[in-house]
Length: 159
View 1 (cartoon, rainbow, N blue to C red):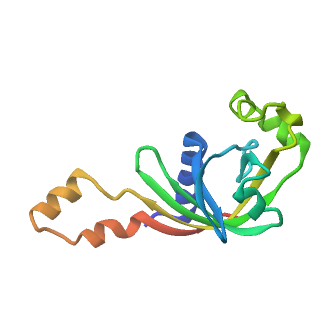
View 2 (cartoon, one colour; view 1 turned 180 degrees about the horizontal axis):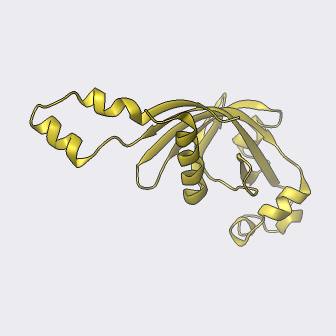
View 3 (tube, rainbow, N blue to C red; view 1 turned 90 degrees about the vertical axis):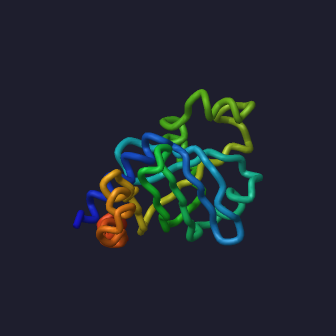
């Protein structure tokens, strides 16, 4: 059985690479957003506009759910945590890039600019348990697919 740290490391490496996840708060369904990262910290940032449902929903710290599927579908995660508005200008400056700038006409001075901060607490992480060997075993009626899968999911503390 793999340890939780391995699952957590795979998750953080994967989401940092793909940079897309769905995030939602109570009353606001998860929506796809581009994830930003400030160095090696395990905090996820999202730029949005202040008048979006998500920004309004996170105007005060809220429990939030982040849903992630790796581009290659080799890793999936449902992450619980807290989402809040983060007005730290130094963080905005560090994360600012041309892709974010394209959404805000007045750049970093745009009055609609809103940075959201997601602090992860716990996650359930799944690795793709599919393999040629597992497929052949299932086709031939050999073994139990649940046995092959049991080491491919973990509940992980991400604090």
